[in-house]
Figure 1 (cartoon, rainbow, N blue to C red):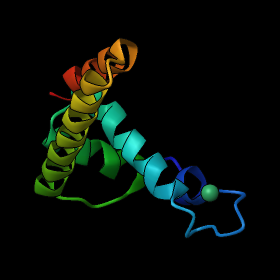
Figure 2: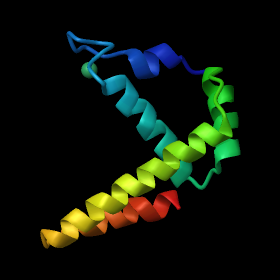
Figure 3: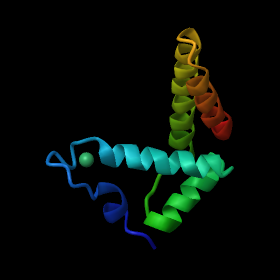
Length: 98
Ligand SMILES: [Zn+2]
């Protein structure tokens, strides 16, 4: 079993744990599981196995949904600004989530 506090709450910032980094690390962890092809139910299982964290598939699903929408907004923005590289990176990231 991995240590949740050590992996996510461990941060050298002075404002830790209110610096926002733990949340960002946790989001990245969730998004990585999704990118590996896991669905909300499987993600909840993995989180439970690795960290003894309880979550609900519905929460994971709405989180992923929100992420996709955020990425879509970023994609539009990059498109408007003519930033092809950014647009491509964002759209790749999005494909991994769908
Ligand atoms: Zn921090």
